[in-house]
Image (cartoon, rainbow, N blue to C red; front, side, top):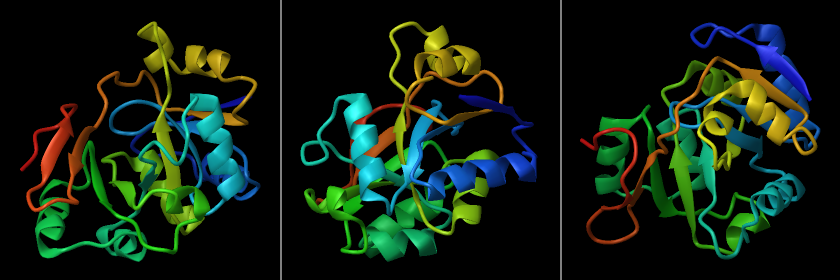
Length: 200
């Protein structure tokens, strides 16, 4: 696995390009978000999505899958946003939140097994640059860890996932608090997991 050390606020374009090339090749990468380091792949590559599900020990038909988008306008290409949800997204993004929304048919079949999709726009320049350069969302899921250091120290994360991810973007020690998950599919938005951030 390649470790690409970057400055979080201004990541090296060469390293972003290397990561995007890996995503386009169907590979899995590890990258920082505004909460926990995450495993990611091209959200339009079904095989890569299923590979991540296998790594995490989850089933795509039983688990809410999430994507990172560049903007709310990009979110609207992949999820249905009503007026209430739009106000929530506008007031809280970018930020450490995952909003569960009804999925649209543009997503690959791994998502179609469920009618919803988790939406993230992290307040993190690395993930923003990756999605912008890729041109479409990244499927994202937090790295699994039992020991705190294996959740936030890039070198230890790389050691743990050496056989499954092709590269890791190292932006320094990460967080161990996950995003707050908000279900927007009902009449009233509901927080289903308290995490980082305070919902406005």
